[in-house]
Amino acid sequence: MNYTNENISVVMLGASGAVGTQVVKRFLKSKQPKNLILLGRRSIDTIQADFVQQHEINIFDPNSYAPFVKNTSVAICTLGVGEPSKMSKEEFLKIDKQAVLDFAQICKKNGVRHFELLSSVGISATSSNFFLRSKGELVAELEKLQFARLSIFQPSMILTPTNRYGISQAIVLKVWPKLNLFLHGNWLKYRGIAVEKLGVAIAENIFSNGSGLEILQYEDFNRISERG
Image (cartoon, rainbow, N blue to C red):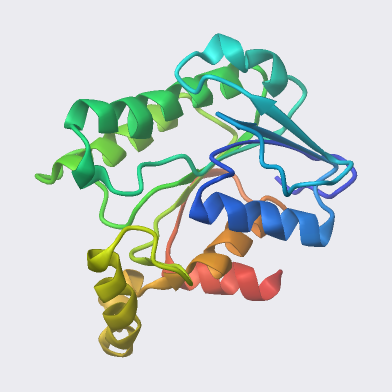
């Protein structure tokens, strides 16, 4: 599956988050794709481009956004909880799992062929860790939808230029880049990735060939972003 600017329309959920912002920024810079539809709880005032449409929706009500998914070929979902430890497991599942699955089901129903999801390294439907297991179960459900192409991005620590969540993130942002020097071989996938580079990789991946399930990790992010 290979798309170009002339024949691609993208619908995106989660554009206001740290990673989603970088995905959109890349599209705005490249002036691709042909159409970009952003779905969110509120519009982003700083985005001004002819090929971008924004719709304020209820992420928990698929009927509120189903009409906007029609005639799109690619869906990108960067929706997620920034600090899952700060909310109940029920709330986490409602956002990180059910809302994403609802979005994917609407996309599949409306003919979307390529679905991209921002997930996490280490996910598994059999993991003893609740958060990793939940994300693994989500991917298993997405596989059942049988998209022509399903791209799962699995970063470890996402390195942002600013601290968004307090002292714990401040420590991580300071220490993790130094740990990268010691992560090699099978541990390479745990290297921290700059949020801008991850956003570029998610954006540029839709213009490459691919089919079926693809798991993308640290080395892939670098390869795709450099190619773009």
